[in-house]
Image (cartoon, rainbow, N blue to C red; front, side, top):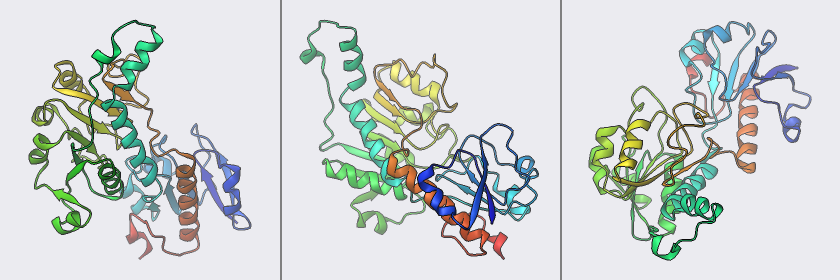
Length: 315
């Protein structure tokens, strides 16, 4: 029987995937006992580096329940012969829908009106409402991968036009899904009524949306980030909002998670925030668990899974 350590407790509904094949040997994020682990089903709360891997002498696989592997040091895994895989297809639907939910909430000023009603303020709501219509607006996507393409489709369904920047997508591929591919991010920014981020957190993308790029955005534009914290300079975003340069922002991710309760972006009426749960719908979590476990078992059996990130360990 293979022995698999789970960062989060395995939901009973997915235990059948291990039947007669593997056993879950523990769960928890504090001082994990990895001495017998042959595989790890990794969440996002631990840093999977060489120090942690050295505690697991039998480790062969780290399977991430998600797209991002910024908490897995892949070179450390590779040098130890540990295969790393992720589940890039699992969060697509949920994250794309959440992106649109944040956009609608910002565009329709839902945070401000909800707080005002709770305070029982008597004001002229009709006069104060300055909701933004998405029909005919231009959506700019930074990244046109699985989630970006799904967001484009949903946005087109409400009448938005879509442009994107992505060095790994050709103009012909973008045109096939009705998206205009822009040559650079700086060329995209001044043209977009809404900017939505769909790239991983890497040294190249850290601080991608900084003060200079926020200044390039169209006055009154909306910024949405349901990708990764750290892509946006939060102090620069706060300044752009306070100056009225941006209409608002929708954020599912922050540089530090969870953000401190006194984080200035949390209390703004022009910002909608959620705690990094875009992919965590019921069906979304089911796909994350199933795809991570299935790939871990494939690797333990000596098979090649579809989403291995360091295939050289199999050679």
